[in-house]
Image (cartoon, rainbow, N blue to C red; front, side, top):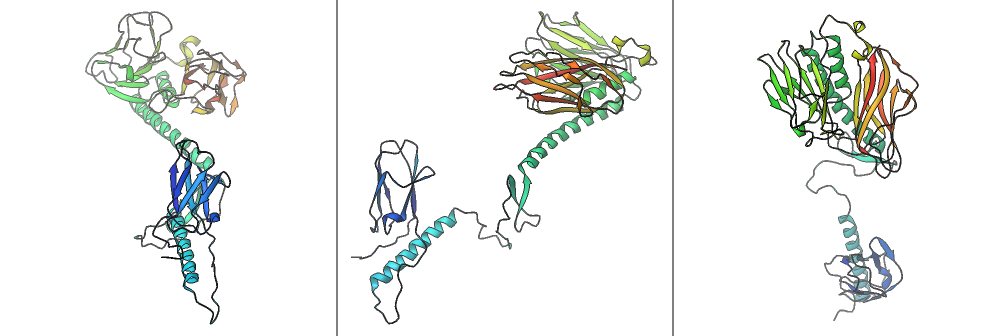
Amino acid sequence: MATHIQIGDVSPRVHYTADGVQTQFTYPFPIFEDADLEVYLDTVAQSVGFTIAGAGDSAGGSVTFDTAPLSTTTVTLARRLAIQRTSDFQESGEFRSKVINDELDYLTASLQQVSDDQARSAQMPITYAANVDMQLPTPQASTALMWNAAADGFANGPTVDEVSNAQTYATNASNSATAAATSATNSANSATASANSATAAQTAAASNMYARNESKSADFSVLAVDDGTQFLIDTAAGDITVTLPEGSIATDGFRIALGKISADNNVVIVNRSGTDTINGSTTWQFSIPHGQSVITLDTTPSPDTWFAAGVGVPSPVGVGDLHDNAKPYDIAFVAGFDDTMVAENIVVQTYGELVIPRAMTVTGEAGYIDTAPTGQAAIVDIEKNGVSIYSTKPEFAASSNALTAGVLSATAFTSGDRLSFKVTQVGTPTAGQSLRFTLKSILA
């Protein structure tokens, strides 16, 4: 019969999930003394409230808690030894088997402990032949750990703020690329169009009003999922009829653009569905070469009302020849939508940037938010070259979908001025979603 602990091939660590009733948990590995066993409830080491049995037994033993651990608690029992020699053999001294066996048992148990620790650490695959330096760099707060450029060691990478900013820049770059592509298409198709038509295309592109372009050359129906679409219509082969969806299946604020890309005088005819109205009538049309119409839905009145505007003015009429109310320069922005125009919470950030191509005068603003903020108002701002144009900013009051107008302190923009649209405060606990904002202005 063995007179010493026998160390078998067994892990020096075991886990259990408590059921709120069981108080005794076994450990299947030997320990030399009670102090060699560490007891954890979830991640917290325990020092009292339990009794250890079985120290010195090759088959292990048990831990009995005074009170059953709570249900779903993870119980961890682990052998933890001080890595040390437990005996020292004297020159020409007595060499007893029990002493050497105890020493070898302790060393074996220590190696099992080191092996278990190593198994839970990051390691290179044994089959990877490259020479890699696994030493970590000096810790740096809020910084990612990454492989270096040669992939042969670790290095400190970008900070948390840099990663967040990179994501923001990537999103803005994607939006800018889409806007630039739309602007380029409109510019190419509008080489002979009037100044007002070009301005409308630039405004729509700069404010990211449209999520995508879709080309049409025959009659078509607008679907409820087409919100935010710009239809590029070629009427070279004849008139084209566009049928709108019923307001009852579209959302308030639904908007599309119809851009005529051909230079002929054929007509784009827009028809309602059901009992909806379009500018108070049942239909709307335009035929100006390279003209553009922006169409939006208001479900507040009854019946649902579609508004259509902005078809362009034929040359040679100039801006100076128009009455003030015939030369709008409205600029639209949106916030609280993801890149597929699905509603999401607004956040405090810049949502739109553009450079003013020609002088304009701001006359006011309009806005609507589908999901109203709660707790406090959602506040928006327009900045000119980094400075707010308001002494009192526009806001959506708590629990209100309607915009409360701001108080303007600066109204004049000249060519080259930078215009920014920002959300500066959101509601709490409800931030608000699906925000639409239009800056009302006229050409100066």
